[in-house]
Length: 255
Image 1 (cartoon, rainbow, N blue to C red):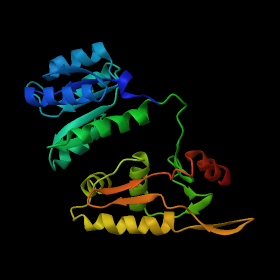
Image 2 (image 1 turned 180 degrees about the vertical axis):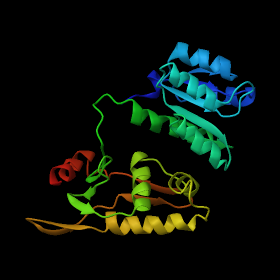
Image 3 (image 1 turned 180 degrees about the horizontal axis):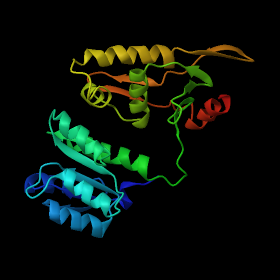
Image 4 (image 1 turned 45 degrees about the horizontal axis):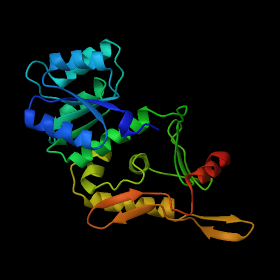
C-alpha cells in the first residue's frame, strides 16, 4: 500500500492563496507537491513529473481542467485526477468523470477532506498486491465485478442504493463520513433531498449487514456490528479489534 511519504501530487489552481494552502497542507501530510497556475503549465508539469495523483481546479485562466485532462490522457498520462469544482455544479462533476477524472471535491472544501480523498484514491490505484475485485472489511465482502455481497459467508441482498452506500463506507474503512459527503457521493446525480435519507439507509444497512446470525458447531451467533455512528459527525465502517480483516476469507470461500 502506498504511503503519503512516497507519493507526488501536482496541484493546479490559479488562485495563489488556495494553491499555497493546498501545498502546505499536503506537504504537512507527507506528500511531495509540485504546483502549476494555469492549464498550459499544468500539462507540461504533469507530463514531466508523472505524479501519483493530480489535484486539478476546473476553472483556469487559459483552458479548463477538463481540457488539461484530455491533453494528458492523450499523452499517455494515467495518473488519477481529483477535480476541484464549483459547489453544486452537477454538470461539471459529470463531465469531469466523463473525460477521465477519478473524483471531485466541491468548493469550499476542508483540507482534511482533500487529504482523505487523495489517500482513498491512492489506496485504489496504487497497491503493492495484484488488483482484486473483492473489497473486504472483517468478514464482510463485496465482489465489485459481480456485485455480490456476503457476510460470514452468507449472501446479503441489497438494493442498488444500499450497495452504493455500503461500497462507499467500505472504500473509506476507518474514516468517518459526514451525511453531506454520503449524500454527495451516493445520491449525487439523482437526489436533492435532506440528510434524513442517509439515516434511513444506514438503518436499512444495519438490519441487513449487522443483523445477521450464523450457526456453527457451538450454536447460533450474531455477527459483530461493523457500521458505527459518530454522533454529530457521521458514519463509518470498521473491523472490530478482535475480528481481523483476514476473516474476510470466510466470505470468499463460501461463494
